[in-house]
Image 1 (cartoon, rainbow, N blue to C red):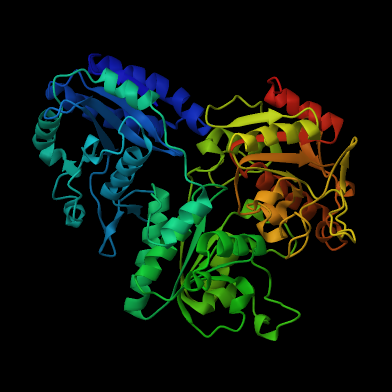
Image 2: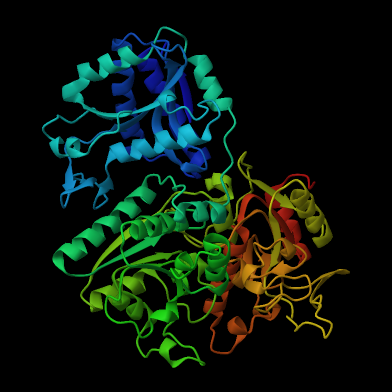
Length: 629
């Protein structure tokens, strides 16, 4: 984010902004701004600065590329800070700047717009985008203190005429969000003059910048509130586009008596589950027959236990993929398939024939609903036989002659909103990504630090446990996980767990590999969220899809640092699914890297690392390059 005063001449401000933008963008996203971004932002900022000067508002402070709380990859083009002319209190105006010269509605949907020349098929209406930014500031920033009158929003299409974007005015606007084009430039200037008083804006800007941000409510608690109609997730940017895409697909499919398939992709914490929960809330309230299915027992049972509680009607919404093996065509109106990267080649249950199918599981899911919606992250495929990829879903939809839509979520909610950490992990593991400008050959880079996320290299497993234990004592949630590199024994006769994970005199058991409680240890499917889970180590199968404030990760001998990069070692694994002879070296390598990608991205506030291999441990220390605590 850049912070500037309008007392600076416009031309000087533009030059300073251009010079600093690339550095600021790289700090926030891990990559410098492109030339097209620089050109677009500079031109738009020039228009805004010119209008502010013409309005005589040199006392207003401008915060450019203001990152949203809990989602730093989403940022408002500008936030204006000043004094409310009528109340004398702080006033903030969120401004979304668009260079569009024309735009129209997408298939007559007032919430989606088509922009000629855009790389996207369609975008969310910018008024909805600004409404989300505004709500995020009102609900999360202490400087605003929950006062909706303290934050307003503006969409400024400074290159468009009212006629060229006339369809966009069909959306019923929120009274606190306005839309202007260059046709209404004088009205925009009058609006600014009518809202901002003579008071200096610097103090208001500093209060917003330095104020406390309300902590994110835990996902499971938030989801429970959402499903019971007491709250909603605030969706931003592509998250909102994904939601509107599904809503539009449902309306279009029913109007035309046809089907649509939607695939929504994104990394850990990009908001996939938030979008899915918002869809579930909206569709059930709209009386649509909707189910929420996954291929993960831990994830599904956690949702049933901690989200639905004793509400049987809500509990019945949550299913497994193989529940649809024998489903009637379009039995559901909407099927939300979360964790779709875990889809299997075919549905199979050796005890129940009705959960078996000779068809591909993805096709069974497509068949089961008028609009199946797949949420996936291809870097979370961790077992052989998991076939849920974007390419596979598109191919099955094409074979069935069903129209397919794809939305990529680029936001980052987990890991404290740290885009830098997400990029660091992918480089560490040699994994690319949808938005990466490098491939798997990129070398790991030093961790440069981020105020939103902490990375610690522990001196030993005992040290890791102590650090996480202190976090628990302070009210955080925390869990220890490890690569599947040690045996996993059945419980002892006295119903105690065997301490299978043994490292230099430190011994701890895996989580209970059982659907029932073992001694004081919780069942496997709720290990990540039950209070008794801290004393055991979880693996990818019990941690996937869930989150904690602090994640401890023991990197086992299946992933080693050699020659400046991480390499996999089949001999270090105890996971029979990965080491069987039918799994190639290339498959094993990819699955192990994906496994650690999952484990390393479970934390919201921080991660504690330890590697059992001494060379790998030294490598991590040098990358993090900071004293252990």
